Image 1 (cartoon, rainbow, N blue to C red):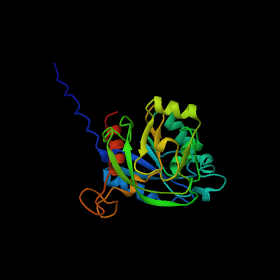
Image 2: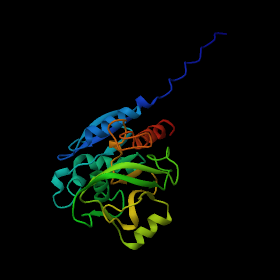
Image 3: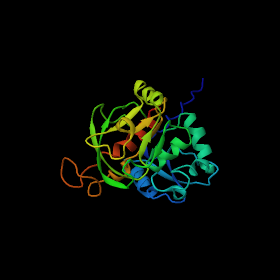
Image 4: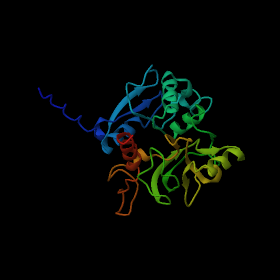
Length: 248
């Protein structure tokens, strides 16, 4: 009787095999920073254009910061109707990890992937600072490498960063544990209940106003426990997503 050899085992997937798309809209500023953050975390960044009709086989999506379409009408209001967003919404509904940073958070709210809305800062001025955040939800695709109650420092820069929602929605977010980050020390924009970031019910979509992509590399981020410009708390957003993709 002839012996048939078993096929060799499939090669294990590595972080470099995970493709994370970074969307560029007209007026996006931080797409290259987000792509670099993905690369530093070990993944493969894939450039997506606002007019793309598909997501080019990516495993996750980042909507980066900036002033898409000049923030005309409202921040993120026009981007919500970009062709690529139809695919992002469908993918998010299907469980794909999606991270919205600053303007990306605004777009997620406009697209109804996250509740609430973003309006002008309560002091009506642009704010740029290193911001301390408390981590409250570590069960999302983008935060499972953090610890509940941990404080992290992430740069923040916005003018339309005040998160607002009705009391019922706020109570629902609190009751379901969907507040992911809260401002510590000072609320820089007047966001309700000091909320800096939230997630959807599935935990695959996260939006926050501070910029983790600006805290991924020693020498270029905020001050940290090891000295000036040593803060790299933002890198764990991207490594969390990569690990979540590898173990799904």
